[in-house]
Image (cartoon, rainbow, N blue to C red):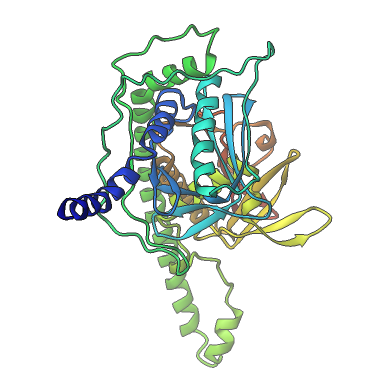
Length: 428
């Protein structure tokens, strides 16, 4: 009788351990695909078994996928290779983007980019296995793999002899959850060991990976050039700041002299008569959290063309919507169209004093340099033909992701309109 009781207790004690390793092989296979064949420097995924949540963290943004609500997993071709699209059920938003300030943006779908069809198909099947398990027998899941012209479906061979017990370091910090969300336990992580050096394919066979390698080789050169440009901008900004301070001091002195000569005029009338200057408010400056907001907007544009951040429709004819994500410091944030493509647009400032606006432009440019990193190249459009007749020096910079052709571009510019200047950001 004692033996039976002991056996019963042993089963109860070991049951969580069995559950914890239940999906470890699936997570290991998923991470082998992501780490070996990602087209956008994908990071390892972790599984929270109790809640059925798949998580990936990259670029200061955490992406969480609720597996039980996934309805479609599909592998398609694209310019960078192959896209593994994961979509929620109709009308659902089962994917959360959580920024570093713990604000979140619900999404209806996400995508993982691969350079190899077999890796994309294998990752899709493994995610499908997890979804099926957490849907608990409910129908409605569709998994569509990539099929070659000859009718074959490529799959990646996962070597069972390789270890899948290596654990990633677990973060001990806590996360504030929504009121209706369960507390998420420590994740199950299976990360395959990276091989010393994989055989490099020919450039003709895999041009995406060849470009990626070339970009990596010039990483130090780009970082050095960007750092030098940043130092030059900071020096110019400091000189401009001194110039503005002197101009303001001269205006203040002139105003005081004028007030001394007009003692008979009421102070309120003098103030009303003075020209008003549009100066940046202290609480409307561009801050560090712009980086997190930019990452969320870029992910939305890449995944579903900004559909999940569409807000109120403001112009039915032009199909212009408000944006649910507001860039800090911008007075307007909306979704419009540019060259037949959906685009996010933010208007920061409109003012007559161009020098003040250039200072804001360079501050935003420095933040973007730090935020986007060395994988992004900046292109100066100030010499474009559209600025040929401009009397002022053009300010127009476009950022492009050299490692991911499908990523939206970020363009910042100052536009002159009837002696007023406006700082714009366009992401498309």
